[in-house]
Image 1 (spheres, one colour):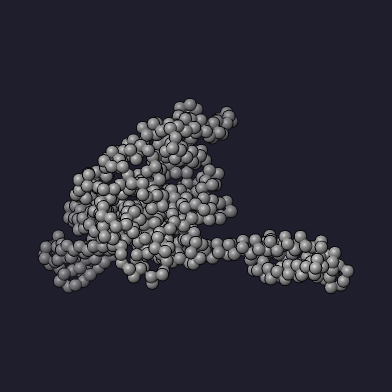
Image 2: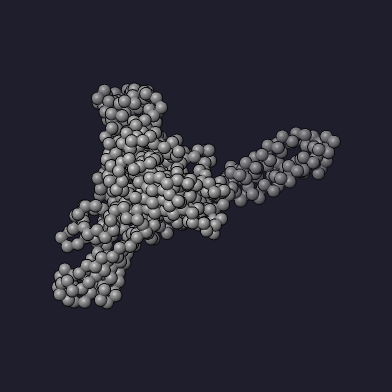
Length: 610
């Protein structure tokens, strides 16, 4: 058990990262291009081929309607929400409503669920880890924003399953960052983790000491991140262009994708320089068939002004989290900045002013979360229990009671795993069933909170109202996944659900996706084997062709020589045909004959030269 490898995956909005513990230390695994992070992008090419990561990003401008980015913002979401409406207006790819009221994405006419898109990205990180470890990795710890609700967590777990991974734990991103920060260090500190990534914001306050990582409070916004900073730049560029030419570039999908690319690039550049030039030649054609160009100069000050309210929103959440942790502002010893957006100088300055101390430089903002996940993974399969993680639930959990009010059973920021029960009574005479509506949130009105699911407890005895007692028990796992049961205390009759309603996928759909995923992995493996065989065959072909003139001259005088040369030409021709047809079986069969031919040619030449 102790030697089993568990990978840690930071499934990010913009980029994803995978790490593993080797020789007691967490190591980030680079992808095939040598990069430590992989773009969280998926595309379907005209050929129908699936593209993931850097290869998907490189073709995004020319294939904008079939390239998905920032899909993490949609995972576990319901269709009919303001967040999804906002995404529909700003994304170049098409969204549709799924059969369970969830969000689906259309690529080249085929409809994909959001967990399925996430699974493609997780599968890519698995392939990267498999290549590094030389083994088929099965177990993973996957991180999610601390403020993700139950549906978003369940959808992420489903994505892992579709990707061929046993997700043994879902952990919160700020907690993972703190784990990496405190790992192997004998410290006692109160730490604030300020995590602003591509799509989400979280802040968590933790106490670290003696190998125990205890979360005191957490809060966040699952629709606030680098994407919103990009949109401010996109709107600034598009509004300026519209004012000048009367054309809204946001209505053209290819132009919108080009704006997205330059906005992200300009944002990153302005962390290092005071001003950057933006040039987009031939961005669109006017009604008079005139090619129009976009040119602009963006300063750091302008960006700071445009995005000041976004930073304000994060600091308001920080203030609430400190209050919930019941510590003073100066009770924080260290501030960790996590996520690519925290490279923005104005943000660093504002965070330092808020907490009254300079943020720690001891963590890598893009890699620390995956490293923490790998540490937790190693701890879960290790015989040594030297790391204890005490996380909290980010939202209150409860049920709807008479009058439409929300009755809280488990308070926000309760340590997980946890369980809580409450006894309710019937509200009508002769009531034989009770409907349990499960909600997550902080509003006193149930309908203002997130509904997680519902179930019916039937078969109650007929009695005057208030006489039949029903005990409702909530359980939250260490992953933050919720299960609820209701029990008739008199008869012991019981009904329960594991809340999975908002994941958006049925068990049948998941099983089908797992099968499709395995087929893809087999095809991918076959493709890699073919490339290896092709490379080796081409090396041998080049050597045979190089030796042909000399060998032909040496042995052409004999009947044996003539047959040998003819046979060698036939073998080479078969190998070329197999390469052209991409036929792995035929290429494998030809490889042995190519090897014999190479050895024969070498022997003939060696004897003559001797």
